[in-house]
Image 1 (tube, rainbow, N blue to C red):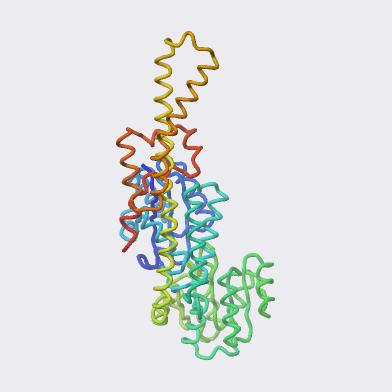
Image 2 (cartoon, rainbow, N blue to C red):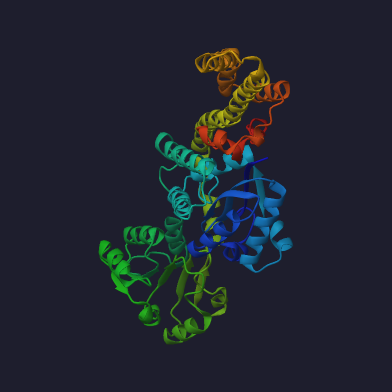
Length: 452
């Protein structure tokens, strides 16, 4: 039996200290996905890792074995015992796993409701899995539909209006800590999407200069030029820190970029002038130990979450509209899922009928000595036609049921009445279907869990 399995942790279940250990930057994500699909029970996988969550979306055989395997790999990557990780883990199957991905992509499960960045993060995670050939027909359809649904939510509701993002909340936090930002010197570490959004928000609040530091200097130059700032090489970062008022860091580095020892020397050179550091990255870019240094104010992703929770009470109505829209998208996806049950059953039904016809013809082969080759061909054609016409109405009824909640009952009845074993379809029959029948025929619990 095969189905969809999702395991993961998020800002709702784990603190940043654990999330950064379980985070899967691109290189680690690739190795984890390859290892997972090399096992017997995991057919497809997409790894989604952001500052707020790490999730594995998998098509699996035995879900218990697959869950244990994936948990062990995540725990190994985080260098912790599985028992330490499991209490922070959520595990969803089939319909619940599908619903979760749709809500994540639409920004309804984000730290910031309606957060715009998550759509791009899901897309990049899916594209990476495509490149690494760890997806299949089911995950391809699942992620395409989830991304399309997320786009509809943002287009047709106001969930993203007056958009609040991690970068804008970071700037608000800077104002709350330092007051007026006019004339402040800011260093943005990281030239990715979040760094760009942060730079834009800072410029709108009146900072005097923005310095962009990135390991790839050409990218730092490009971002700095767009905002009238200056690019900073990493080897000159300590000197720039001595003159900065605010540091916002958001990179994909697996290691700390700012260490306590280095910052201690910087603070001694600043003669007591305070420094605000806002670390949006997971894993964290800034050593948490810097909090103990005099004059240093460090805020991380969990501090931003607490601020977000105070500011988003006005989005409930739009979130309800978004949920209703997602229900329609999920219903459409489930109708497609229904066809995955139908196709292999139809193939098996016709295969059984053709096999019976061939068997009867073979049993009577010795009685037709006087038949010419042309007559034999006519008899075989007639037998095949009888099978197809006899099965025409059951086939049409079964196809029509794919749009109804009665699909499962029809499928099971046919399997029982005709003794069909669709899980032993030949590779040829499986390839003839338009859907990944052999990999998803057990996804039946979705209708039981559609409504929370």
